[in-house]
Image (spheres, one colour):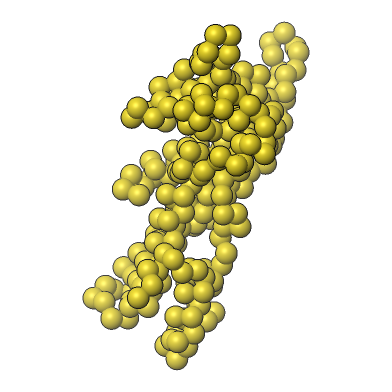
Length: 254
């Protein structure tokens, strides 16, 4: 039998539901939920370039600066954010299969209808929250703040959707991002430090040649190149980090 995670989850669920037409109504909220495409992208978009230190030492900084050369040697396993995204995407697909199985066998278990409803609802909320983490829905917001001196200052926030305990999608995440762009390298270093990496800024690979940043964990050193200042792509990183923390606080067991 082909492992389920190698199949397209939507096709798998739809095919299995088609075989049970006589048992379930297709206007059922759970069936509709399972048929939705919650995630439109298959990777995490950001604008940091990441390669192992040994590759950069072999080819020099140009391997990070030349897009064609970088793309030739890039692998998703070098990308810290893509690794987190891939891990959660696999869990997202497993949760959808679990929801399908829970729903299909709900008439055979010993739970009361209310207990079954609560289990299905909790799992659907978890799936929806993880999908918002994998595909953040956010928008920039500028708020004016009047100082005691009478001057006004603009503060730039990224405001992201999350799902509350009742299953309602709301803009519940606010992240101040404007000041982060003013000290971008420092903020990126702090982000990796919070993720458990040792961070080396201005890492020298040879006399007179320095790299933006090298992060290190479990003896693996990865070079980080802040290639382009695109606010939206950097905001993606900060919002993704915030949503991962929020999700893992609410679901410490994954």
